[in-house]
Image (tube, rainbow, N blue to C red; front, side, top):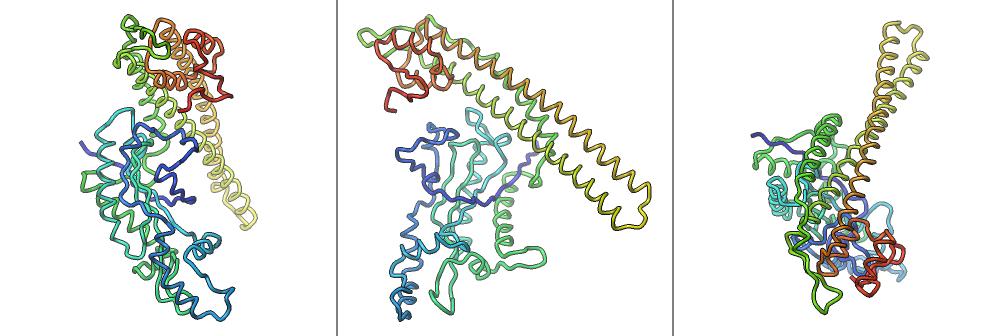
Length: 423
């Protein structure tokens, strides 16, 4: 069976090393990160940016400062140079690209390991091995594989440095010059050296994907209409999986003697609730993706209509004579595009109805979880509260009052007050 995928090497405009290293301190973790899978992440390089600047530029700063006759023109330290580059409008202290095979629908996490997800992870290992020494004037600061988000991907953060400057620091941060010194040039096909370099990075991704038997789709990949149809089929498949899930066996639930804050539930029964919640969340993400695709199609169609009208107006002004047939053709194209906009608006309304149905599904899950708790489904306090929060039950006052009264203390607070437990 043939396989195909896209490859992506996209520039990250705002480098966040704390995010890459998962060093959030006391700050809340982003909701799209699955903390249970965070230990699966792989750090190929984890360096301190200040220490990298010491390694690359300390000697150049000494040479620069020795040539200065005025103290106010001396840099004094690599930290001062790092601060200067950070404040610069022409350079960045560190650059980053995100490398990825496929997307959340072809190689994404679906609640369990899949062959495509595992293969994407393995291919990223090979990418990390190939790029670490391929570009000698890009000093890698961070190279980490994230497996705790929707799709496996690499964050590659680096400092581009160039040499042989005639004045000032002989070695300094310089993206374009670093690319040129590595042999990448602007030409008729590439506007900048960086574009030529980025094409080489994509070549690395493509060659690895082909070694694994993949054919490469265009950057756009399938048409948006095809993707929407695939999303619909995926949603229908998930609906079938949700219906097929077994209900938890409430007869296996028992209270813990003399421990009011603990309950016992077989792991298998607890996993049933978690699996259903995971599938509902995944289904919601597919619906949101459909909505994004439709909104994008609608915007593109509207832009196309506008461009057709503008072109028609320009032609009418520039030409003394425009054939009636050409004008009619442009008008017909504009009308077809307008009809497409109307069709997309109708499809958007249908998807909004789908979202309403999803909300009803969530309410049903909420009721199931509430009934299960009343009948004695129990678990470790933290695990149970996680499920309550995931299902949104903590927002219901009746549910909170019932649980707090049964337990004998306020273990669930209203959403505006946060969680009672320090988790």
